Length: 274
Image 1: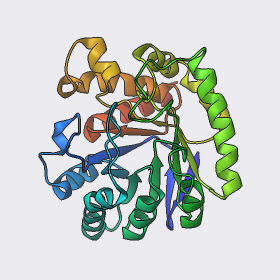
Image 2 (image 1 turned 135 degrees about the vertical axis):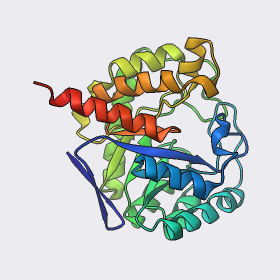
Image 3 (image 1 turned 45 degrees about the vertical axis):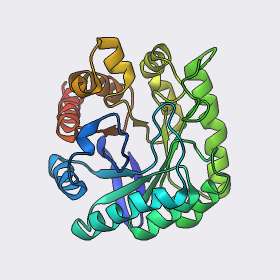
Image 4 (image 1 turned 90 degrees about the vertical axis):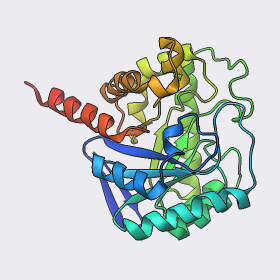
């Protein structure tokens, strides 16, 4: 069991939990988040069982371009403030690789920093998170969002991701970050084959004794394998989320909270069976 201190709110991970994705970006590959009011979406996710709401204003899809911290702040801070006011008990995470945005977001009400770059795109990120005293989602990514899907190469993807985390966890702890969550980074500098290999052996990451976040919801690994679109990838997402749970995931980062919660309920019942 893992315990995270989210600005005084203790998050107990004795059972897997769901992180709902709220994209404040105009180019989200899953348009369901763009067409709904953010507060309505947050209310639905919380009602469906989400424990964490992950708000991001900087696109990290392959080939995406970086925006300024000011523009990112303009996208996310009003959303964080509004959700914090409407749902004061909600745990909000900020999805950013900018230390400036992370700092402002936590001041506005966020209680977790979710960084796809693991501090590699902003050298101030790790000391900033340490100073804020909030949990840190440390994700593996080969390259940057602009270049990550241009022929990613690994000799052994699982071993290289494990080695990355061993070094990065040491760095995070040296900076003073107390609560670390690791994210293998499905789809970030990895081919479909890499993603399936990493998912199959994800239980190797358990030896790090940290919560594992799996973010594979509606990604290309699913819809390209099935020959469908992201909009039709819910069933495939549930299938891979279930595999992730069986291989040690403590947090599922998803667009569809209700279905992820159903997967967790069934997984928990399966585990309790004699």
